[in-house]
Length: 443
Image (cartoon, rainbow, N blue to C red; front, side):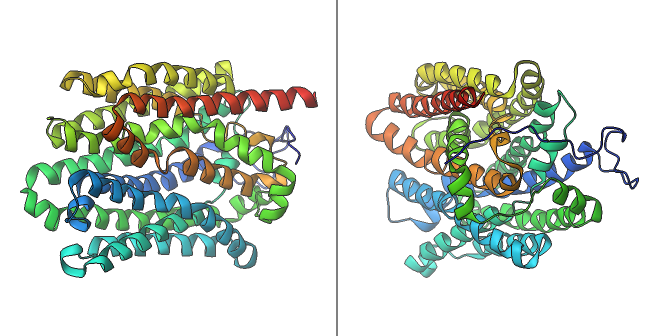
């Protein structure tokens, strides 16, 4: 396998004003960023609605015969299925795009995502359907993962390739703002419902409303994204930058090492992602005394801090380099892993500090985690390579994080939570060092 670092030519000629094509149409990086933010915010809202429900709702609704811990572990196992299915969805959707086009692919993906999300909202619990309810929940979750794999539109890669010189870190972080935006909205909605309803009302019907909202947002986001990516201006840019699907076998044969390195380079950030969002919510419900609405409130504050940190990461990356920033943040996350168990296992103030510090570190690292090494891809492989790299980063780093962290912490103590996070740090540092060595050998 080869790994070639290339410097891409700008999408516009040097004598054209920034963001203006020779035919006079405006396609500025800021316009592309709008599409990226819209798409990511809707996906993350759907993502966190399911994640929060996995901790607060599904153990009681779908696994009532199990104790609270085992029910949560089973719910987290189903939660992970979407990440397993996501690369499969990417592969199938690339085939659809090559045959019928990008708009057809996106329409099918968002239709599948909306159908599965609405299906979960209407799904009766175990008391009504028995094991069939669990099977249907798992199938809907797999469908969500397939849909997310198919929702790749290439706009993040297009944005990175058309960002002004010296501003790639800044524009790279814009799409990542979708994560705290989706989390804040989902957490706020669940906090309101949890505090406004009785527990029986919440578990009976209240938890379904966030899924209805997610369905509505997905519909709006679909039309907004389609209006962007099917215009002649965007089609011209995507074609000009060779952002089109390539066969998976060809990609892995020629640029497979870049996929692997890119997936592991983001591992510290992706592991931390679920360890400050979904996992601590389950730990608080099972073992801590802090009321759930109050804890969600702290997490919402953490979400705002995360958004601020993501913005700061753009400045840091443009000043010190994206890979240097990601490596330095991985080391800071490694330091955090040392005292994270003490904070989470302490009093309410300590638990809140765990959340707030963790969200700041998450924002600083996650802001540059996506696509940090995808510039290694040859232009014709970047579209498919960036999608698969992202899928595998989620699969390896985040899919099983809540499940593994809860199982280890419940059976062996919170110290193993720190070790688990530290393993992600080691993978990130190792991948970045290997990438640097490969680049040096080519110079």
